[in-house]
Image (cartoon, rainbow, N blue to C red; front, side, top):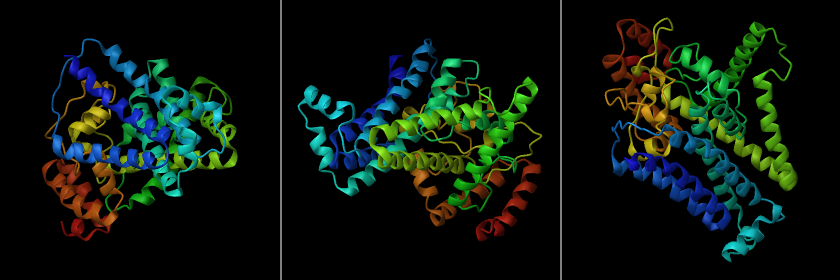
Length: 385
């Protein structure tokens, strides 16, 4: 049914809306940010769950939809950086006016600082949604060099090409254990987790690549090093920002990229918070927080079906099952991210869910690990539980 192909184009509609907001400039940037936030939060709240499992006879269309994220994100970030430049880089504004009659340069130049703040939030949100989410799917396709290339370029926008190494070969092996940098133990502050997971994740990626090169008989400090090559991609983007608008444009892009990386770690935090698992046993759907909210699922390439993804990481997004009996997040992805960013609210809402997980989902061995985690958590509700 053609609808099941078309629903994933909601992703591209969101990206195009963000690009249009930057072209509109000024108050349109703020309106774009508010509109996209409302689309996800209100849309998930009123549209219910998607538990459909259609079969797709033309998977190439679905892969092409993923690849389209790279030109889309490039356009969004270009327009965003252009919005803080003093000159009309590449005559972009002039071209917009010639095509539409709209004076984009004048709208940009009349923007106030608060609109640039909105632009910052909109940019790192789009790097996360259009870039990281798509790259997450693509870099699991280790057998497909085109998908890997597109995915790594998308990750370069958040200075996180090491994710393509650590996530696939580290996180998926150690998820929900103390060995996994991305799994937040019970009671951990989300902002501490962003920093700790970033540092430990990069160290893990470096060590994994180091071991690979050693087995292949190649030097660590060479172009054979995928981790180092990834840093060159991010440096190329920084150089492009410098060429567009000097130090101001560069600083703006770097701050947006770092914020997008922290956004990923916020997502890691909420996807696996408080989970425990014996690393000797296979990963099961119960070891990830799941959600089937319709808007999040359709416009995030089923990232929401995280329980199945971790049980079978090689399954493409369109074939992931909803697992309605898996442990469920507070709400859709964006709503849960906002709650996770407010630690007192997060712990108030998640403590009952974690205790429910212990009772309903944990194996006998995991119940012991959970009791130990609760005792160390510093969260009174968990320690009483």
